[in-house]
Structures are given as structure tokens and as C-alpha cells.
Image (tube, rainbow, N blue to C red; front, side, top):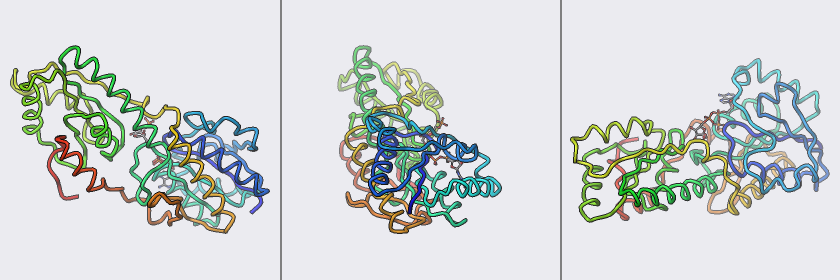
Length: 331
Ligand code: ADP
Ligand code: F6P
């Protein structure tokens, strides 16, 4: 393996930069040439390549976002787009490709592998919805960002004796909402994995008000409905049922923009290194996964199209801490 490339794709996640740094440094140490493809699969189709070296990635491991940039590219989903990508990669003499992204990006990587390219995936998404890995790069930073923001919201909520609804990202997964409900001491987590129980929610809020708590926090995952829709449902209750004035905060893309935490820098370094070792030993079609705090290679085929379930332990913990999370439903 003499010449490899790396691209980041889909929604950016804090920790993608430490991954690029780690892949570059490991590969350079092994005498490989490393190319960065800018702007994800779109940049691949636009032939937007830059050569990476130790100097180019210097200091990048501490920066948020992805300095290679990322995109969502419809042209690449079609077979013609993938054939064009293969021709461009061949023209550059690229023998192995590292793709950092979520389910869609890894599906794209697998398509290239089926056309004969050696590929290795790295899970990079804030959602932590990828099957097969305990953590994806960016999740920890995102959780820390949400936690700090909710703490701040709680401060103003307490001053005004208000109830706040906080909408968080996560696509179809309630992972971010459930974890931050636990870490911030929220009263309710509204998540797609469980059926909303409005009666229970109002009961929790009323009881809290009766006990003279001066604030309440409800974390809602975007995969259930918009925070605005949920606020309407709360406001539809007969006046006086929810005695606290209720406000909504939609956290939005700020959740993706944090400076990578120690955990994400370390995970990025470990996964990036492992991806190069995999390419060196002619592994292909695999994703680096964290399993039991060890780096492992698992087939991309076993990851895509599946959803990582919430752990039973985290559900139990939330319930035992008194967080209302709704009713279990058959998944
Ligand atoms: P994520 O990787 O975070 O899941 P997306 O679902 O937006 O993000 O996917 C990122 C990109 O991966 C898409 O814009 C597209 O270029 C590529 N991709 C997604 N799905 C496929 C697919 N089924 N086949 C090939 N490429 C895909
Ligand atoms: O997959 C990461 C994510 O941030 C999701 O949590 C969210 O639903 C989506 O990307 C937002 O995408 P965009 O940046 O295109 O608005």
C-alpha cells in the first residue's frame, strides 16, 4: 500500500479532524503517500484532492469540524457517480480509501469496495446510531455541548420558575436525548424508541411544581417531532394543568460545533491509526468499531441499514432516576 486517501462525509462531527491527523501521521510513518479529498463524495466527483503531510495536519487534532470539509452528494448515490469516482481514484493511483461518516457515507464506501477499491470506514456522527460500535467519533463532544447548554437553560428556567422544552438532534435515535436527560437531571426525555405518554408527563410536572421546584426540563429528540409541535401539545392541556410557564429552545447545529473533548481526540487517534493498519494488512470493506473499549474491525455490511439500540442499562438508569421516558413499544 503506497498511496491512500481520506474523506469525511455526511454531517460533520467533532473528532473528524483528530481522525484525519491520525490517519495522516500513521500513514506517513509507514512510508505511504496520503491524499485528502475535500468536501466528501462531492469533492471526489469534482476531483478536489490535496496532498496531506505532517505539517498540513499540525494542530488540526484540536480543532472542531472537519478541515477537509464534508457534503451530502446525490450524484454519488447513483451508479454512474460511483463509476466516475472510481475512474478519478484510479487516475490518482489511490489504492486504499478511508471514509469517515455515518450510515449513508459507509454505504457509499461499500459501493466503492464492491467495484474493487480497498476501503475502511470510521464511524463519524454525533447521533451514535451506528450499529456495531459503542461510540462514534463526535458523540462525546456533542453530549458535553448539550449538557452545558441545558445547564445554562436550567439557570434561567429557575430564575423564572419556568418549564423548558429542549429539542436535540439525533435523527431517528433518542440516544443524545436520553443520555443528556440523565446527565443534566432532566425530568422528561421524549425519544422515538418509546411511546409518548402525555398523562405521565403532566403528572411528573405537576408533582414537581407541587413540591416547590422552581423549574423543569423536558429533552425531546428531533426524531419524535419538532419541539414546536410538542410545545403545542403541552399548551393544549387545559389551562392550569401545567402550572409552569413553558418555553422552547431548539439547540440546532451548535450541537455539532464543539471543540473535540479528550475522549473524541483519543477515539479519533485510535480509530485513525487502526484504519491505516487495516489498509496495510489488506483489510477491505470493514469499519473500525469500539467494542469493550478495544478497537476492532467489523464488516461494513454488518453495520449499514441497521440501527444501534439504546442499551437496557441506560433505560433502567433513567427510569430509576425518575426520568419519564414514555412506554416501551415493540421495535
Ligand atoms: P451520514 O453518512 O451521516 O449517514 P448521509 O446519509 O447524508 O450522512 O450520507 C452522506 C453521503 O453518503 C450522501 O450524501 C451520499 O453521497 C452518500 N450515500 C448515502 N447513501 C448512499 C447510498 N445508498 N449509496 C451510495 N452513497 C450513499
Ligand atoms: O447526522 C447528524 C445530524 O446532525 C443529525 O443529528 C441531524 O438530523 C442532521 O445531521 C442535520 O443535518 P443538516 O446539517 O443537513 O441540517
